[in-house]
Image (tube, rainbow, N blue to C red; front, side, top):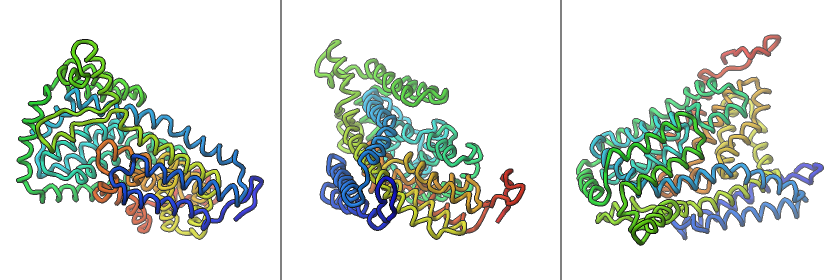
Amino acid sequence: MKDSPHGRTPGWKVSLLPFLLLVILLFLVIKHFGSGALDGGSQVALLISTGVALAISMLVYHTPWEQIETAMAENIRSIGTAVVILLLIGAISGSWMVSGIVPTLICYGLKILSPKVFLLAVCLICALVSVVTGSSWTTIATIGVAFLGIGAAMGFSAPWTAGAIISGAYFGDKISPLSDTTVLASSVSGTPLFSHIRYMMVTTVPSFVIASVVFLVASILHDPGDALRAGEFSDALHASFRISPWLLLVPVATGILIYKRVPAIITLMLAALMAGIAALVAQPDIIASIGGGNGFAGGFRGLFITWYGDTAVETGNAVLDPLVSTRGVNGMLSTVFLIFCAAAFGGAMTGAGMIQSITQVLTRRVSGRTPLVASTVATGVFADMVTGDQYLSIILTCNLYKDLYKEKGFESRLLSRSTEDSATVTSVLIPWNSCGMTQATVLKVPTLEYLPYCFFNLISPLMSILVAATGYRIYRLAKGPSASSERPEHL
């Protein structure tokens, strides 16, 4: 431990205690609560671990409360936009389903997609949409939900379909110049945006190709007899909703807004509003039923409940009914609660200097390119687990390693790529991270269930280390008088 004007900094062994406690508590919560772990148990685990971190830092190491409070407040402030987006996604999930938009996408998808290439098609389409939108969250919350229904109709398990959706969405998000995480990683590391994107292709494309091959093989090996459900699903949806190509104007309009780079909050708000209007026009009986009446009062209540509350449309198909039921904004509140608790835990660990102590151990004996990249990847994953937020993880990892990369003579784009290969793509694999919580809520598939099938997200960190080991396109900055020009020398 070190002395400082603000008290002493805990050593790395002590700093690990709150994190290890969190892992144990979350293991017990998930084991005993199962799918209900997000309803309160995980939040309590985070708060207990936060309390332990505070007790150690303040009572033993005399860290000033103001220092920790500032770090916690900064963490919570940084998630404000994400929370609003999450609530709007809840409104979209309800309105896009009840209006018939998602059922229409499912019906048309069943006609177009073949079970023999389904998972591959899902991965590729989600990747394309995510590149254009720059948002994995938006992609998953819209067409991702539709693909989940199509996959169920074709007999694919929800975790397999969710893995294909997430793999494609995060690949597209990662290489899109419109992505906030891509812009963040390039800016914090000091790397030009398009230089960062081009350099990521060296590890990202091979990871995506391998994942795509796995999804193709899984689709080919899929039992075609299960696809007989598709007709049942289509008939049930046609009987329950008014299926019309006119409803696709809403996702088309949403795509135009995204293309025009309208801010995400405004885009999502308009998407929910347009879907609400479409619901009143295309599904008046369903809206009236949800509102419990007729006329203006029933329509008004039904529309608002569609945005914020629980809705269930009886289709007569026991497998389909859960897929078309939604919880609106209310369904996101437990996730929002969890995000705030995770931000508090990350703030306490950061304010106490515990994260810094742990990462210093990781970098202490780093010398060559492979240990340096491996250490960066490990830090990115660890930061995702501790801070519970990918944005904080990216900022923390880049700031911790920026000077070290410069000292060792490596380009900043190697840092930005290694950070994205870890902090960005693994965030969705951690149950208490904001990304993992959000996608589990939106897709209705627990994080640990879809995790083994997110092949792109699992392969990317390993690919980053493998490429570093080969030395392919990894350069040292030229030394001497020409160093200021950052002319690379191949290793």
